[in-house]
Length: 178
Image: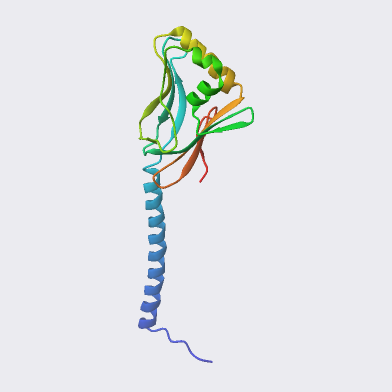
């Protein structure tokens, strides 16, 4: 049998290899943590909310509550099984719900593909100013159309790292899709 000699040189070289492997593992772990931190530091978080229900001033808001910009990739409304691509809530209501055209004090901001919503920004998508009857009319239309589940408004948006989320009317938070 051959006798194994472990002299100080073999011990030092084995220890150096072991330390190098541990250093590589730590480096990979730190790199992954830094990537995750960068990704989270620019994450957008869109939400849909109502302001001023029951009064003369009503707003349906699209808000970016995240800490990075949201890049809108698509918008659509699905109504009774039919898909209306490239339509936000205003365009859908105006083109398909006749009662919407009776509202006088109606302001809106379109939500469309290519729109960038900065972090902390709130867009008044639908707005009624100083008219309780018009606000009530719009809320009734929205309730009859979206609250019943007949219609669903969807926004697909992305972060600067191309991570994508889906925001649907009626959901409490966006869903990550990629």
